Image (cartoon, rainbow, N blue to C red; front, side, top):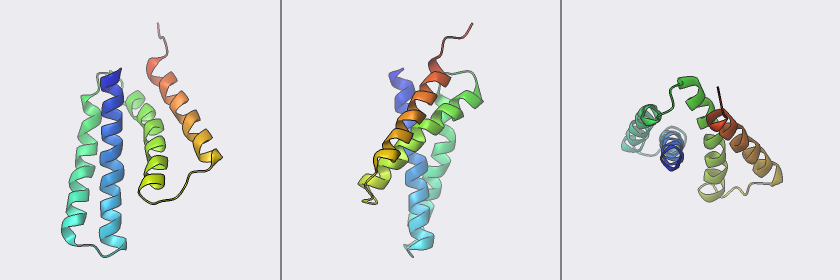
Length: 108
């Protein structure tokens, strides 16, 4: 379970960080190398979920969506300096609960 959580967080940071670097390059006129680094991180994001040991592609990505939402809220707070409100936290908690059900529900 620890490895799965780590891989989800690593994938999320690669996706959000990569997207952010591409954003900086295209929207804030940062150098090309910033955009290229973003593209590399986005490619890494495509590979990282394949390291999960869950057998179903759809379940992995559905559960990852919940982790991504929490990480995006935290990124906005820590990097963009936009404080999440109560509804951001409630929504993120609901997503994590949903992701946990998708991954770890007992199935017969």
